[in-house]
Length: 107
Image 1: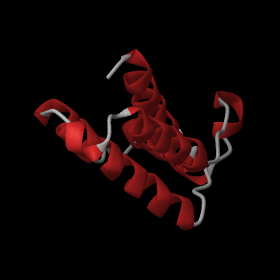
Image 2: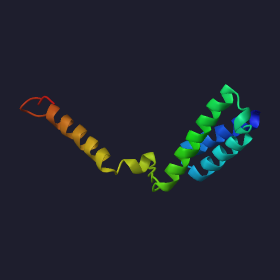
Image 3: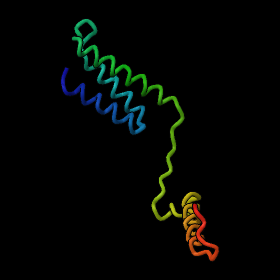
Image 4: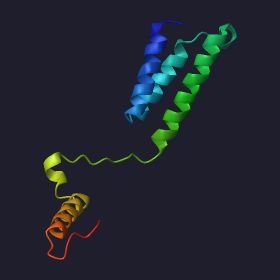
């Protein structure tokens, strides 16, 4: 077993972490193909085969699920989001409470 096998397994894991499930599955298959035939596996190679098989199974399962969608908002646009406006309003209300003639209202 050489470094090519570990490179394929590394790529499979990285691709899966980045939601590249098809690439991940292909890499896990190639890692499995690099292992010797079933009869000639050492104990270590058997462990690797189990790990690679599990990685392949997870990648194939994840590929069947609907893709996850992420929204990335830059810092300037984030100030208009509801939770950011609520935080700003809360800060303003606290500041007004401290300046009240009645006295400060505890938070």
